[in-house]
Length: 134
Image 1 (cartoon, helix red, strand yellow):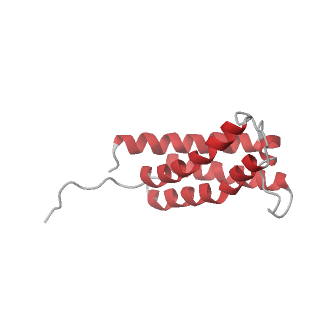
Image 2 (cartoon, one colour):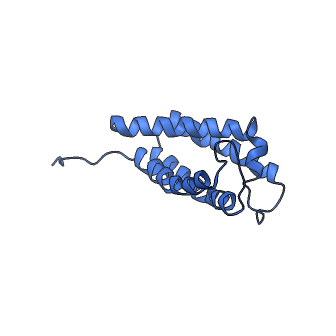
C-alpha cells in the first residue's frame, strides 16, 4: 500500500504528463518544436508529436495502473532524463516557449528536471515498512 503523499505526487505527476502531452499535440506544438535539439534526427514536429504521445501514455499509466507502478515510475524517470537535452538546448540557444520566456526561467527549469526524476521514482515506490513480520 502506498502512502497518501506518494499517491498525491503520483496522481499529480500523471496529470502533469497528460496535460503536457496534450500541449505537445495541440496548443503548444509549435513552441515545443523550438526546444528539440538540432542533433536529433528527423523533423522536429515528429519528435514533438512522438514525445506528446509518450507523455500521454506514461501519464495515463501513472494515473491508472495498479500493478507495475515501480516499472512505470522508472520509465517516467528515464523519459525525463531523455528529454533533458531539450531543456538544455532551450536555455543555451535562448529559445522561448510559453511560460519559459526569460533566461532566468529557462535556467531555473533545468533544476526542475532532477526533481521530476526523483518524484517519478519516489511516488511509485511502496513506503518502507516500519517493522518486519516473522
